[in-house]
Image 1 (cartoon, rainbow, N blue to C red):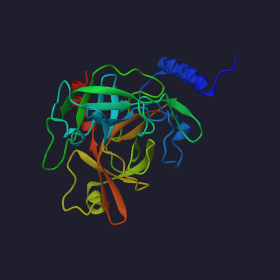
Image 2: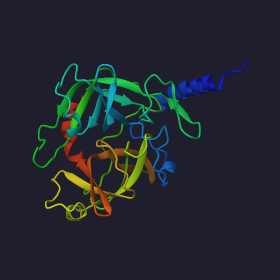
Image 3: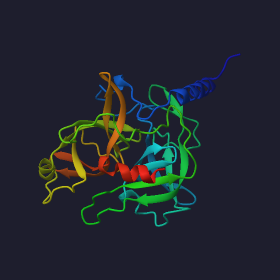
Image 4: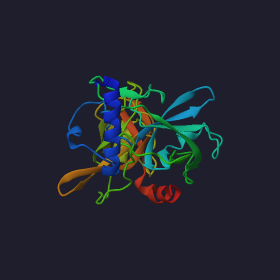
Length: 284
């Protein structure tokens, strides 16, 4: 009996999804995908990034903010991204769209395919039932711009929906002058993107952004290779190396804003390394 192409794809995806459950680990990476200048992520790459939506009753509005999966019940984003949600528990109207590669896809779509006809399952929606903003958020400086969102139901892990690691086994003392990876969604294309950014000193950041003041103490700046503007909430990631091999990504910061000044676009990130105890305590 001959099977249709779509049915074969669905059966293959189901098999891969089941296989991934046994192979699951946070921060999964494929080394060959690290060494590329391609700004478009593969459909199965960086499976911890989603989109924050607002439930408006008859439709979902894209807030143009990314979320990062940190465990089966929680995602991380910026505090600024959740300002629109006045209700912080229960029916918050916030929704996390996970397992998304093309942000124009809807959960009703069975498959999302790239131009090479590689397909992944369509995205899934998870209602947010609690929003916790960092208690030390500074409204004047913008520091500690973080929020943890609790989901209504646990995320079902597949090859296309997995969490980021929150820490590495061995981490540098400073994030300055580090060439780090970032991923998420942006204003140029609907597909999930990725890139590299060199983190710079606070003085260099002040110069790049033409600012009169330094960035807040818990924030840092990245100078990206490309000027594509990614949505707030995009994760900045380092790589945990074990036995001389890149083992997994771990989260070091999330994007809070992009600054255009002259010929430069600078990314301003919220350092999550200094907020890990708060994140872990509130993501139980």
